[in-house]
Length: 250
Image 1 (tube, helix red, strand yellow):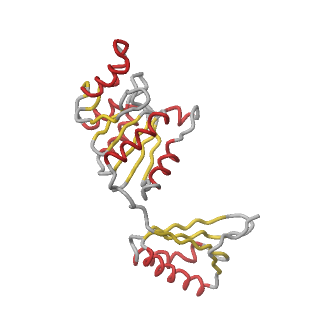
Image 2: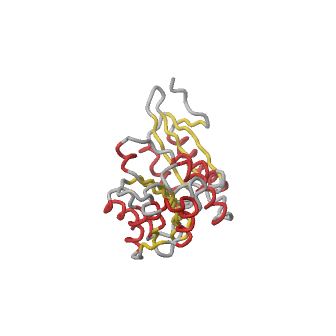
């Protein structure tokens, strides 16, 4: 299962606020042996938001979404999900009960609007103010406030995906290639991707005092060992040097 993140809000794109969800989500997933396949930061503009939700909802991916589920005019996530999924936006009985329990008569006429969820949704408990998030298929929509959404994220993983673990590549090896260029090693890189399609290959050139290529392979350990042997043979044949330690660029 691929895992994605939608991080929503004009304030992030304008620079009024800095995103904190991406790094936190990476950390939470890593503790379970999981990692993100993609992340999108998008503003509140309806057509733009619907465009990315259409992409996301059409996939089987597990998606965590942060932001835009309030009741103000710039909060459009609930409405956009309903429109893209072609379902009605209806008062969710459990969400209504949670908001009424927290606010009583003060829930009306405005706070209760946050109980209007896409038909078929399931609520995500909010331990801070009891205004729930919602799940729609494998998509989970939470507030933009980390104080609320981060405990909700843990709840989702513990209650819905407790068996989802250790999907990230099991091993990684990195070597540092000096005195060579990526173009000189393209043939062996392509040979590796053909011979070991499940491996994740990364080639990162570094500039500076000691220019070098940081080359990594992630995946099954036995495959990595074989692929690294291919690469090191090509490096040696080309007369380049490699090391398991990064060059000193100071």
